[in-house]
Image 1 (cartoon, rainbow, N blue to C red):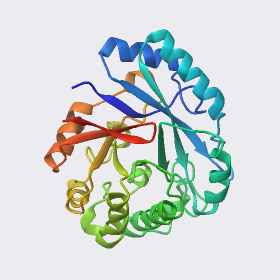
Image 2 (cartoon, rainbow, N blue to C red):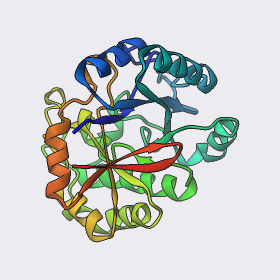
Image 3 (cartoon, rainbow, N blue to C red):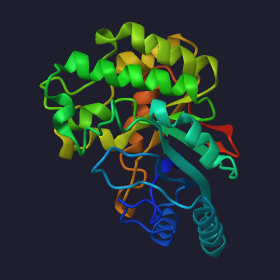
Amino acid sequence: MRYFDTHTHSQFSPDSLMNMESAAALCLKKGLAGLVFTDHMDIDTPTGVESFMFDPGAQQAEAERVSREYNVELLKGIELGLQPGTVEKSRERLSPFTFDTVILSVHSVDGMDPYHQPVFFEDKDHIRAYGRYLETILECITKYRDFDILGHYDYITRYAPYRERNLRYRDFPDLLDSILSYLATNGKALEINTNTYRAKYKGATAPDEGVFKRFRELKGEFVSIGSDAHSSDRICENFDLFGEFAKSCGFRYLTMFRGRKASLTAI
């Protein structure tokens, strides 16, 4: 199948090494269907953390230019890093723009980003830390409904100091049921973020199948796969592996969003 990478970062993300032209060239080389540039927009990042903001108008103009030049589908997206206290600011900031895809992600919990501020973990076991992260996700998705994909629901595990480095359904059935039911009922996609399962994090090599099987039981239809690539060599990384994972959990299609409408590709 021809894959579409639904989560990538271009030069408009401050932590990305990939420009749009190198991404487009790789799409052509690998025969990919295309990708979405979902650059970072995190309003009011915690003190001491680099600002993750960009100009959507400039990003979209560049994506359109490169798409025409390379004759490859490059969609306009955003990864909105949300905190409960930034919901209204985020609405105001994004209201002038239209996107193909909006990913809602949580990077910061209780004013701390676990990547930059590992102090978040110091007084917590994995149940308390992961549970607090899920509570924050639930609060954010129910306050800010204008999104398509819930990004890396298990982001917290990448940087955790615990032996348990997978966020498992059996440990948080009530919280995860609330999140997954909301996604299923409202036509949102649950993301498999292949970046989380890279060897560099020395954690889980795949998501917990219990989470995705439960999502399917709750009538969840949409699963997306995103590389979270910040360099062109990672575009569509391990998509064959995780496509099979989605299929084994009962999903027949992978989902991407074009013009904020779901488009399905059979696995």
